[in-house]
Amino acid sequence: MSLTEPAQAETFTTDALIIGAGPVGLFAVFELGLLDIKAHLIDILDRPGGQCTELYPEKPIYDIPAYPIITGQELTDRLMEQIAPFKPVFHLGQMAVSLEKTTDEKWLVKTDLGTEITAKVIIIAAGGGSFMPKKPALADIESYEGQSVFYAVRKMDHFRGKNIVIAGGGDSALDWTINLLNVAKSVTLVHRRDDFRAAPDSVNKMREAVAAGHMTLKICDLVGLSGDAPALKGLHVKSKELGEEFLPCDTLLAFYGLTMKLGPIADFGLNLHENLIPVDTEKFETSTPQIFAIGDINYYPGKLKLILSGFHEAALMSQQAFRYIFPDKKLRFQYTTSSSDLQGKLGVA
Image (cartoon, rainbow, N blue to C red; front, side, top):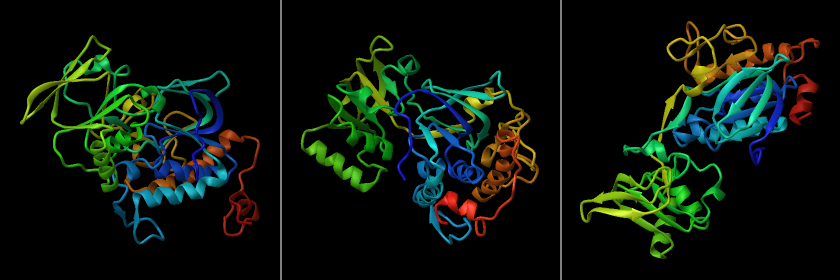
């Protein structure tokens, strides 16, 4: 399934907005779609799947019904196939930073890229919270962020003609090293050791590019930034062989991994319990009407943090969402195995 994703920050209106595109958020699209509810999704990552694709794409999962074993990436791929008939719209590489009620009893969510989405209901399916980048321990790095220091690539063209240093040794660092070779003026990969955690094919492509003179590989540690913030002029790096040296550049992309934090959701005005969002177990609605929380982000007595539990929560949430979105319609419970209406929506009738 190709992602339906806007090319730039815009203003949108939809029935339901899902914050988080992990497995539970994706399955919510399916349950909502069966009820004719259109959905948009926001996720800070650059692809759907949440933790399953970002942290353990090849890790086996054994407790998904009907799959004795399935990887995180495979599960995401199957869910994407399942929701394809409902044409969800993805806003990837963005973080929901504010939530406010509109005058017509809807909700307006704004992202850090300026996208605005108005929806009748909000579904928070953000797992343990937002993925936040782990930052290099460099003095004054915050003063360069957003101008010359970045932790993600949201638009490749932003880096066109730049002299880039990419720091890190995992998949993100190697992938963007390769992808930016034909965009940037120069690319240097910096890693503290000549051993990488990325896919072997990516490592091989990087080494081939180094051998061909298309980029530079430096085995060293970052020790400092240089330049009048927020403009970067270069990096101070240190290695055992050469000691400290200066590495000219105007852009640093640091890929040191991600950590989970509740992030701006904590400021949405919802009741919280130990950084989780309490919900009722009938509708999985929060303390605020029209706002739901499903998956690992929510709390209730007896809660089990399982993908399976999140799927169940998505199904019940959708029933109440229908009542908000279509207050004048009668909700009819139907089975996909016997309903020609539902099978038509899925394209299997």
